[in-house]
Image (cartoon, rainbow, N blue to C red; front, side, top):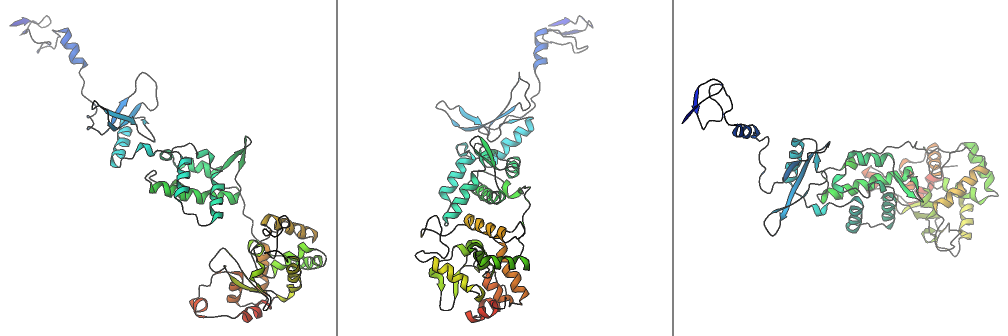
Length: 400
């Protein structure tokens, strides 16, 4: 049946809700219904792919929430959890991209552990052959407390950058900033820890290796002693045992830690040599002749260390262990102060003093490297040449 349009007076079907001639609404209910129908902006996501929903009613910077399907309940309905490490996004496209990335390589949300839990797991699986290395790792991790509670999958460049810029630990409610040596250990520890996280599919990128360690520390360069300082140390050594220890190191070329770790059992009194060394393959178990100019000093230490395993036993724990670096540094500073030496010298400067004197005396380059424990890249010298101790002695005696 037909009816007349009130607007244009044309005949139209009574079932029409708008006039085909002028568009006048003939049925208010159907017109409003048509207005409410809008084309969908986004396609329906596949089953099990996840959910993206926009949170309305609140002024949110990131209103789009991403949920992933982790299973189904007894009734068959999907069980959803927030996507980690980030579940809220500013646009639908960002949310969809994050959901797509997750579905390319889904990970178990149960493995979303904190950095401190990751560190514990790493230590349990990490083979640490040297107890000192384990001690250093734990020492460095103590200054990473700002990362402890952050989930591994949430770690980003900014977290590592802030850590490297300001590593600290809290002691009695006060922040203790890491020293340069500790910061260096921290960098190495974080590199390995993030490598471990990647191997467990907890990280996609090692931000620690890509982030440089920031430090205001100015590294001190080692410097040898002047002739006047050496002469002053010799004069002081006539009455001061500390100065004798400094001179012993200057004429042997040991690193401070190597000298302190000398055992009496590693000393051969027949040919007056010491076997010792550490750190590198070339430095371990090297033979160093005792220079004749300091043999009297050596015998004094030898006599006073009777009953101990070490040439320089600890004065605090007699016989139990050797003098530690901190103790030697105190001795070193005391001797240089009494000798009137320039400020700024470090115990390692004695090793540089030995190398400087050896160069000035035209010591054979290979003899010098064998004595101080530096690697020799020349295959003929390193692999196919045997050098007797007598040759090393001839060369070291060139130093006057």
